[in-house]
Length: 190
Image 1 (cartoon, rainbow, N blue to C red):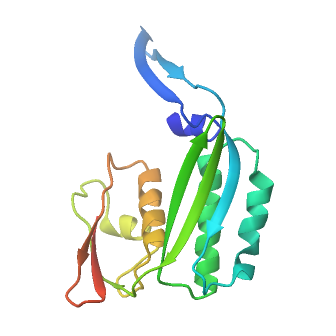
Image 2 (image 1 turned 30 degrees about the vertical axis):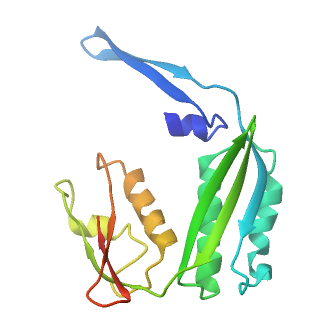
């Protein structure tokens, strides 16, 4: 419900309370107390790249920034931008990157910096999945954009965890990144 409001521009929406009322044997009514607050719009959107990256490879991102400027805030649009960045970095062989999103809310405008940084070259040694009593392990692994032996990429890992959370079959999904058996390997615990 909160994401529904965030996708419609209500960045600061809060679900204050909820109440269920039984109407009869087969029906009930859900009542939510929601404070949507004021609508928020995209302000300045900026892509910060390492100096050795070719800005021309990211023209699509800048076009998307221009298109959504002054539009209502939406977490789906943020996800779309991150997917575009992921697609471009994969096409251009930028495998060892980290992307962070910094949001700065000023009145009814949200300014966002997408920071792309090169990281040390690490590879995924192993992916451990713990606490799953809901589904077969391959259902979880099929949602992962990283696999054992792949270059370790924070953006792809975060995208994978978001996909797992979106399935709504787990109450919570957490990750822990550990050092691998060699200097350039990582172990991912989910």
